[in-house]
Amino acid sequence: MPTNGVDVKRLKVGVIGCGKIAETHLPYIRKAGGDVVAIADVSLVQANDLADRFAVQRIYRSARDLLEFEKPDVESIFNREQTILLHLKNFFPQGISGEVKLVTPAGWNLESSETRFRLGPKEESHLPIHFTLSPEASSGPQLLRLDFSLAADRNYQFSVHRVLQLGLADVTITMASRLREDGFLEVTQQLTNTTGKPLSFQCVLFSPGRRRESRQLMAGPNGQTPLLFLLENGESLLGQKLTLRAEELGGGRVLNYSLTADR
Image: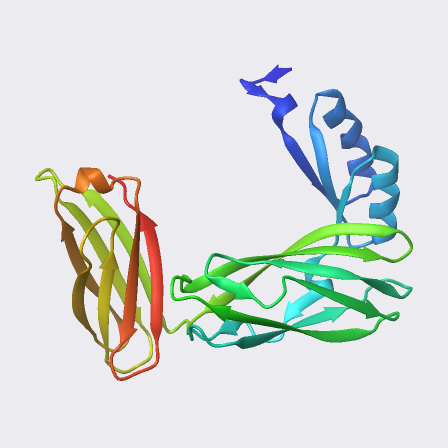
């Protein structure tokens, strides 16, 4: 059933809040051909009631009430085991049991992607997650997904997203590319340093089928420093993944970033 040029039969809808307004809207969404795939409410009783009446499979509650990572930062140390603690809280009125599966970005190697848990009413726990980082793991904010399957008054399945910072946030890099009229692909790196002291980095750009390009960058305190790479026959690199590795000279930082070359 097209509406304003959009085929609503193809729409997947999530509803936040399970009060009277949601009860009014859900039948019309279904009648129009929309697919209600998830509902969320701070009250699991209301969410559960609405889910049963409208046959919605996935139920969410405020993720903040459910879990937090003990620390929001992960060290950019590669090929060495690290541990992060997942702070889990039982917000159900009864005991719960189940498992959580952690879905991580590329370059994160988990000792086990699934962790089982059992909590009494209002009980809290810290679940250790063991992992190692491969050198290709990207630096900066990293989105992780946690898929829960648990048993309480009924069986629940839901997902929570969390962001962890890989590497210290006081040094960040952005990248951009463009194809120049002379055929060279111009790759611009912008390093932001907020440490309050000068830093030096050896920056290496990897591109498919090409020799690596290496540059040294001197970053002043509390500022931005650009760095330029020029790659010949740039047309052949469009759509390809380029990877930058910036290793601090005389320090411990190793930053990895990537982009897909475009015009």
